[in-house]
Length: 222
Image (cartoon, rainbow, N blue to C red; front, side, top):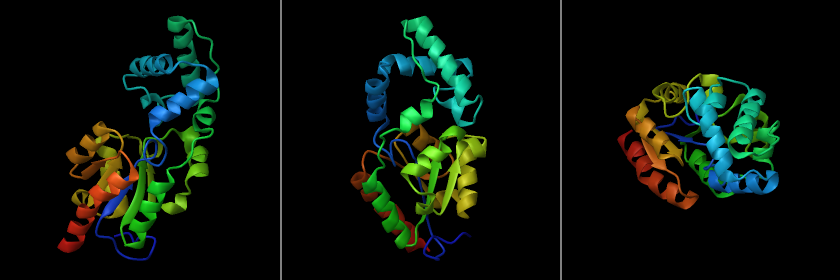
């Protein structure tokens, strides 16, 4: 069983999502991207979804495993924007533009630090394209976590069962002692289907409050 950052053997693992949890809500990032690049949010979202469907997945599926590299994906999204919306867009460095000016959620990072000091295993579990690896690390240090599991290295993505099984093995704990904190209900449902518990994230205070009884219960059973 893995030890936490303070050297204790954990009784519970809390796995936090990245986008929309360790960052502001994804809707805010879309609005900022729209203002900066002049691509209407609805058109970008629909173009991303169309490219995702062509690969048999959702909007971010092609990048998260990945099924295609970011440069190719960006050209395909640009083509849909041109064909369907008459928009000329340069998405050649999409990831950098997506992360530019995007602040970390300091309140949630502070909550996670408190959990680690209490002996809770804290990991990051994210659907993450390979091209975004250096970008997220500029926002949140990997040292904040006991482990990081990301989709492009795992070969599966939330809400697929396989990535939750890998994360549980990484923590050295059974699924019933793992909790996902995620802003997407479908990912929370995937975690529960894998035998985990889950907290659907709205803000740091709400998530910390919902985690408290789960952590207390795990400690009491130990």
